[in-house]
Image 1 (cartoon, rainbow, N blue to C red):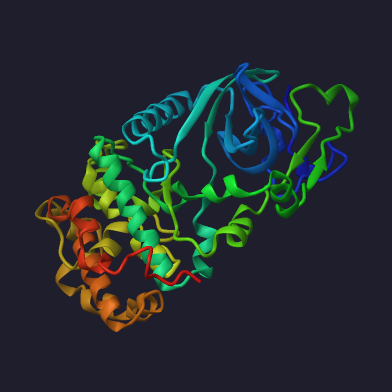
Image 2 (image 1 turned 45 degrees about the horizontal axis):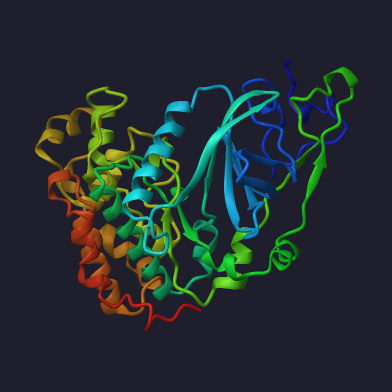
Length: 398
C-alpha cells in the first residue's frame, strides 16, 4: 500500500501533528502499528504491556512499558521497522549491550544501558526486532535546568561510560549527547498508578482514512505524542546525582566526527574510514554538557577542518599539504587563543568559579587536538584534576 503525505489533507480526516512519527512509515516494511495496552513478548514468563510513548527515530518507535509479572517494573521497549535496512545496526547494538551487561551485570554501577530482553515481533508490516532495556531519560532536555556541579557529575559519568566501552574493546564511533541518557532507578520506588497519573496525558490523534479501503491493518488506530519523561525525572529525581548511560549506537552525527574521520572523508574521499578509541575521545561531549551548546552546528563536512584547526591551533603534518590548496586560510594566521578567550564566558557560566573554568579549559585543550595519537585515553580523562571535586556526597544538585 502506498500512502500519500498526510499534510496534503486528502488521505486522512485529521492532520498528523509534528510531535509524532510520520504516518507514511506505517506500511509493509515500516513501523509496527503499536497502541497503548498491547502486550508483547515471546516468553510466557516475560511479557511487556505498552503504557506510553517515549519517542521515535526513523528506524524505530520507543515505548514505556510494564512487565506483566507481579513486579510491574517499568522498562523501555524499542520496536524497529521491518524493512531490514537497519538489522545489522540493531544486531550490533544487541551484541554490545549483551557484552557490557554480562561484564557488568549490576546496572547501578554500569554506565551502559542494561539489556533486559530482545525478541522478534511478527506484525502486519513484517518482522520487527524488539529490544527491551532499562528506562533512561534523554539528557539534552535537562541541561538548561541544571547547575554546574550536576553538569560536572554528568560529564564524569559520560567519561566513565566511555571507559567501560573501551575496556570492552568497543568503539562507539558516533558518540553524541543524543546517544546518552540518565537512568531512572527511582521508577522502581514509585507506585505505578502515580507514575501514569503524573506523566503527561496521552495525546492521541486518530488515524482515520478518507477512503475506507485504505484503513488497513498496517495503520495504527491512532498516533501518540511522547510523554515528557524529562519533566517526570525532574519531579522524582532532581535531588539525586545523574547516573549516566550510553543508550544508543546508531550512526550519522556529522557534528561529532573526529578530525581524522573528516580528513579521510574530505581529503582522501573514503566514506567509511576505520574508527579507533581516540575518535570517541574527540566527540566526548564535555563542552556541550557544560555549555548546553554544540562545538559545531550546521556546518558542512568541508567547513569542519578550518573550525577544528581554530580550536586546536595546529594541524597534523598530513594536513599541511592540503590546507593551502583546499581551504582559504593559513594555519599560521589562526588565533587559537582568541577562540578560547571568546568562549571563556560561555564555559564560565557552566562552572563553579574561575579556577574551575581554567581547569576545564586545560582538559578540553588536551582532548580537542587534531592528531589522535596526542589525545588522552578515557581512563586518563576520568583521573583529570577537573573531576576531583565530583562526589555524590558533596555536590549541590539543585
